[in-house]
Length: 424
Image (tube, rainbow, N blue to C red; front, side, top):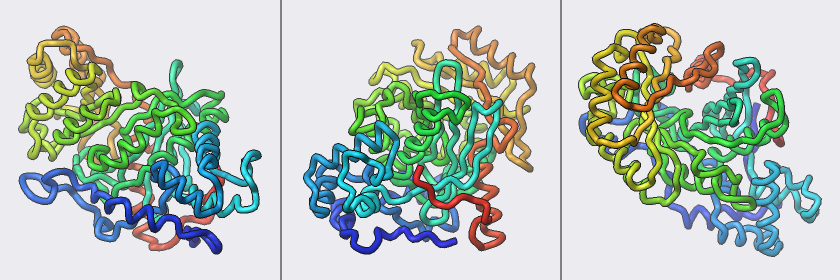
């Protein structure tokens, strides 16, 4: 199945000027990632990464107005597009009752090219968790997960195709990094999920309230697109989805320059650090990036983030049986965090979602409880993470990894029962 992603006959080539104004997309390789103690792990596809079509959300206001002018419309029409897209989650211009219909399809092709399409969905937790496998314009695969809780609805989104961090217990890490995603590709995950939540996909209608950059990829390795997406997630319509910045979480393995840059943005997003080990020797094995930015550097930067933003930092810690879940690990972790002397962190021990064929397995329940008890006794706020999707391909990247393997084996188009590009 071939999908024509061109703007179509009669559509002005409005993206050329915008591209000339914009720097080349970041490679996704993190600072120092091409040399030194740890080099970012690249997918074989990385050398052939492409640039997705420019989307309304990739443009600034000046670029949007210029594109609209080339189509012969006044600049106030841009605000109408933004209102429909961000407030109503609708990119089908022909359905806008307040927009001229003579060139509706041309306007849609210009501002809302198809960037992602759902290939498959998996449900878990009695329908309150939905994982979506997405196909991108270049055949890449990513995942997002929509989850309903009693008091919130949360979307976990991807920011890169694959990941270059090489963590051996992570399904995405085994894929390597293919490319960064555009802001448009990131935000289309949000729009689609917000629409699903509104329409009752999780059992009853709800409002998407939280967004976490904890899907595929290292978000700080795609900094420009990540920040462009965050600003539009948190701005009010017609400039954004209106989700509070305080309900947005950015997860990182510890890219110190990125953490320090984030603290200067003036947007109070929550920082989550995927630590997973309390000692450098163990973390070198579990999180290879530690060879570039050691634990003390990462925690120093994270604490500085807390001081600058007044937002408590989350420490993510995947518990692995016999590897990092013993009493000595919990005591050392508490000591390192208490070194800073204030209530600056909340630790989330996470029961591991093991990947198929991996030697990394989930901890015993009694070891999870002991780990949590030691942290509490040391005065550390800690909550065992609720694991979602344990009865599906729960660990991030599993579904995409399976699809990419299948794709490589067949070197053909997706199965015919996979839906075509949709208007949703």
